[in-house]
Image (spheres, rainbow, N blue to C red):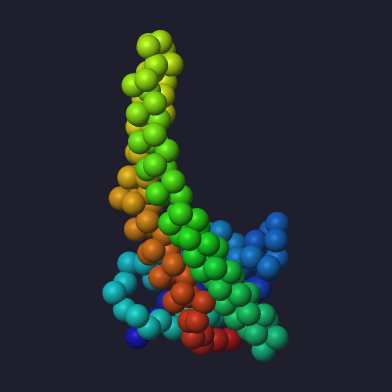
Length: 152
């Protein structure tokens, strides 16, 4: 089991300054990087600096709630991408075929380029973005259930 050490001066340093129900972006990045570079499946977050039981409970709720919402958001993005890819493929093919019907060179070229861009968007999503989304979901799932140890 891998331990991630975290020192907080107070609870507010963990909160986003614009929305107190969200984590500070630098803390989110730190925790995600700590999980992302490890092969372990189980982690413990060792937190220093939160003195009262109430602060500890609030931090635990903040962290778990933030990552539960992040998992849901990433799943929704993944679902949206699943129906978007076939649509882009069909649109790209249709635009390429339609481009062959026009005798006006400018219109034909614009439709041809638009068709290839639509197909490239689909390929880009499959080859590059999907893997990133899946790893972000994995990391957020781990952090949404991570166990915590508090030291005063």
